[in-house]
Length: 240
Image (cartoon, rainbow, N blue to C red):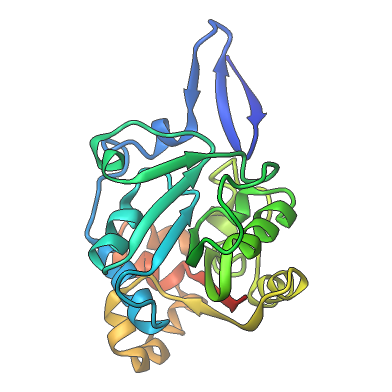
C-alpha cells in the first residue's frame, strides 16, 4: 500500500516500508520515457519565433531532467535551471542548477537577471501560481520575455488527471488572464500542436481540426502523430 504526500510543488509516493520515490524519477526516468529530439526542435523554434538572440541568459523554471536546457543551449542561449531539487544524470552536470520551492520560495537570483524565462508543464502542478509568476516577473529584465506551456484542458480532459500531480487545469483565456494579473504585457496565448511539421506549415492545422471532434482520445494514444493532433498544449507568452 502507498500514501501520497505533498512536498513543495512536487508530489512524492511514500511506501509504508519507509522508502520514498520521486515522481519524476519513477514516471519520467529514461527507461519509462526515453529522450527524443523534440526538445531541441521546440527550443530552436521558440528562440527563432520570439527573437531570443544568441547569448541571451535564459532560465528554465522547473527544468526537471534538463532536456530543454540542452535544447536552448544548442539554440545559442546561456541556459540555467531551477527546480525543487537537483535530479541525477550526466546531462544536468553541464548546467548551473539551483533549487527552490517554486510555489513558495523566493527564487535564488537577483532582480532583472534574465533575458527570458521558460517553463513547460509546470504551472498546472501549482495550487496557486502567485509566487511562481511573481518571481518570474522579478527575475526578468525589463523587456524580457516569459514563455509558459501547459496542457490545454479542453483537448486533454481525458488524460489530464492521469498525472495525479496535476492540480490546476488551464484554457487559453485563463492563462492569458493570470499573466495579465501578474503584470505581463503584450500577452499572447494560443493552442499549440506538439508537431514540428505544423510549425513549418501552420496551414495544415485546418486539416487536423476535425480529428479533435471525431477521433476518441483513447484511440489516439497508440500513435504519436494522432495523439499530438488531438492533445494540445497552450503556449502563453508575455513581456515584462
